[in-house]
Image 1 (cartoon, rainbow, N blue to C red):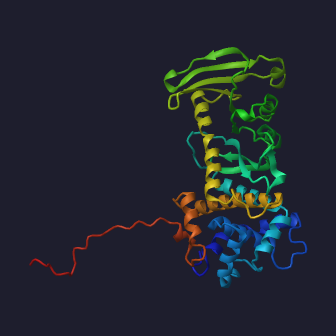
Image 2 (image 1 turned 120 degrees about the vertical axis):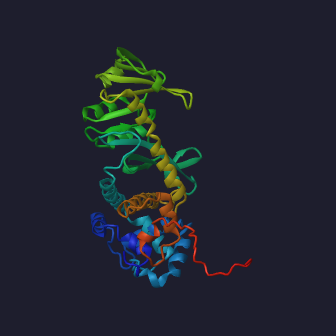
Image 3 (image 1 turned 180 degrees about the vertical axis):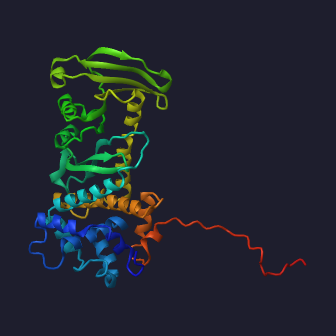
Length: 388
């Protein structure tokens, strides 16, 4: 990397600008734009995410302080809080959603051979959602309770590298199970979900698509046992059964056989019941895979703590979705940089380093490479001995 350019410029060199321009042209994003382009908007919002800016005025003050460097950082337009607020409000958020999917495709290619806690050959995904709370008086379009507003981020997380394969932003009133209608399931892949996605008609569509699912059974789950398979109870397993649905409507929604696994979690003193259409993996592997579902919860926690998606620079629906999608793209971009530069640092550490060094002129590979200092004993010290 060129040490004569800022770290921010080197970081943005990992962004495929040709693909970004295609996304802009797809939605006619630069129509009647004279000075502040969609690329300028993305760079300003990326700077805000990387440095955790508090407001539009904060973004404006920091970037105007570095005005001599802005041209070489790629920002050609004049940075103004009013201009940035207007861009976030009127320019289609789908531009940044599509571009985030481009970065996700690059990242998933880099992490395709990444290993996780379970030794598994096929792809495995964890599906869940999180609610981002909003102020009802400022965001009335996002109301979902009498005194509360919010949006829901549905995420399909690839467990190889913890990269979000898909994401959907909806109103908080949308039930989680509806997202299953939007996903094109990959044949042979495993989809791990909690009980919120337990809809047998939709689960059967996963089965018909030659994919596998793992979820938990509800307390009132009715079934008829066909076979019981031997289990090793020292591993925590209590039963491994082949079942069919007992209820009329449930049997109509899912007419095929299912696998029911009971597992005792000694660490939490809890018995868990799993339902899956996978009859090939060992029962203990099914339980271990469901434990990996916690990675999507950690992903939500990470982006809420380390990126700017809990307070927003605009109050319109377009501005909120724009900010969330740019935050997701920055998360994926940092993951790409980590992999391509072969850094051993965590994403959190890399993000913290970038937050205080974006205007520095040094190779980015050196900035995110851990350096260890050792005290060396110099035997040829020329200092005189005081006691001789």
